[in-house]
Image 1: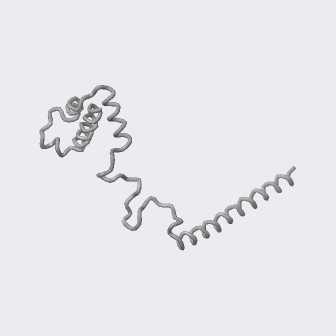
Image 2: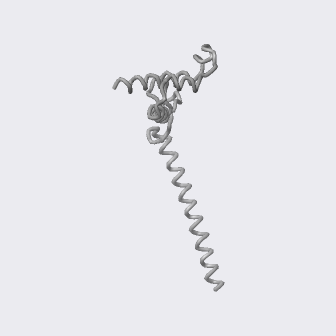
Image 3: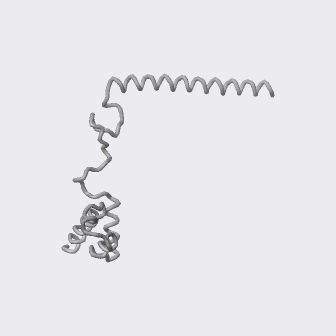
Length: 118
């Protein structure tokens, strides 16, 4: 019984060490291939300016979550004036214009007007 245990432990240790040795060789090979051909590397950066491809720019459409929020507000019957009151009740106009929620409200107003026009 002890002999079988020693054989199994040795076999497991041998297999574990050969697997890591093969993995390290594959890693070395992959790094050499990737260094030789930059098109094979998977990256979220675009060229040298390091801008993320997944990050939206300011002139793109609204995000999915924003559209979902607008749909919810519209479905609940919230008018732009109601949303304006939620965001900016009691605030000075100069503060409101610099608030990031003001742009959200403007986009919702455009969304609401577009839906009402249909």
